[in-house]
Picture 1 (cartoon, one colour):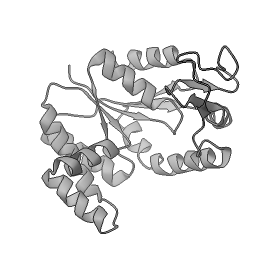
Picture 2 (cartoon, one colour; picture 1 turned 90 degrees about the vertical axis):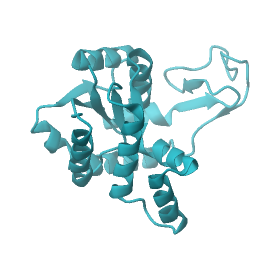
Picture 3 (tube, one colour; picture 1 turned 135 degrees about the horizontal axis):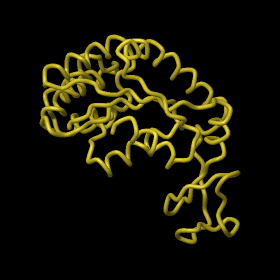
Picture 4 (cartoon, one colour; picture 1 turned 135 degrees about the vertical axis):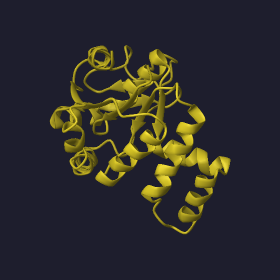
Length: 216
């Protein structure tokens, strides 16, 4: 059975981790509009050329172009591949457009899965994270320190780094932006009865189990 799902949640909620698991375990394809845009520009597809012209002129890529990218990618995949939409739709107009794109290819949206988070706990989760500068292994000030202080468990590296935007002000701004962008689309899908919430603050395996129960 082919599935078409949207994973919703603010930055740091774990969407990327859960999408990776769905890709690995169910051979789903994650459709990230940012990744698709870069790939289409590089490949020189018709929509990619359109997008490049807009970006070269300093403009914002329109909904029409993004919809074209999604349509192109779905056509490449064929009708037997399940997909996860990442970062799209973000507005009511995009939600309507996605319905049209899917319907034109004999698909429909099956599930909108929202990873619910506690804002204060999410700030704590994000602002405490750091990684090995050599191999990229992830750590956390409170939850996952290296076994030997200042030495990476995986590669023995002694240099660590933090993302410059992993600070409280930036995280809270991203949360506010997420609420502003997703608020308009949730009622559309709630009215269809396809929105399900999963506790995004639970352990990773528990979140995965919650998602599996929804898509089973």
